[in-house]
Length: 355
Image 1: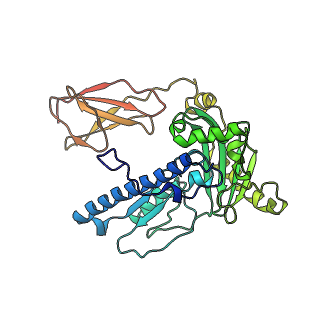
Image 2: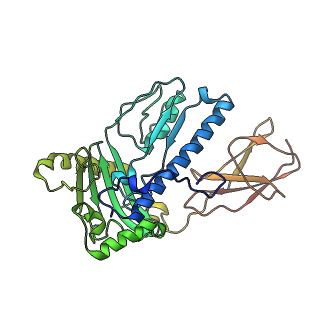
Image 3: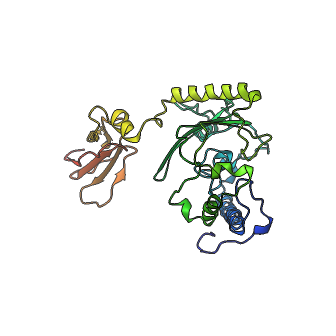
């Protein structure tokens, strides 16, 4: 919708949209596709407003702009699925005085942080999984992008995948579950009812097996150069044995190197990996107060990665601690520490009698 209104721009004619072969071609499906494009038009207008704000502020010529979405199309077999329809996102990087070019290098979200650092002239940290795909410190890519899906709202479905930009290998760890299953949010999308109706009818074309079948194959392989919609599974094709083996090995290596915890049950992962040794909530260590000769204060916590909130006693809200701040003689500081997955610490107080 347009900012500040509830109107949806109606720009795209439903009769003129292209319906992927894995969806039923019905007026409802066409309307949802058209609405998606209409939302893109509205979003594009909003981005234009933000660019104009940068221009008016005199910042456009010194700003690097990253434009991307968080997942593929938000329709059935899009968002939450590890096919191209669910994982391919738009990505445009605008660099001041930069020339227009198109890169066919596979890029993942883990590459974003190193790329932002690259534009700032900062080398990526060794623990970062990604590689800078732009900027003065650009690095060669690995040629591979990995995908994982474990929980979709209240539903569990463990899937892993890898692509080299052309071939996509998929490993399904819960093949007994269908590819499209009821998810509360998705059930409100009008065309979801059309998917259910197609299943109930038992009538489908050869490209719709992924939304029709009651389960999934353990492995899938697609050649997006000849099959852009990824509906022809080549995993059993003898000519694809080398490709499947290469990507299978790469996926298994990635899972091992990253310590993939998704294959554990959630309760098991919580007790054995996230909250050892008791399996119960771990208490975040209380903040400690430090100061320097200039009267500036800072907080630390013995729990690595903990966030610390502070305030002067009597204030209602908490401030996140990020940098040293001046102390107030005669005041009382309150602080609390918390790390996600841990229980928050108790609130501690520090009386500031001297500076």
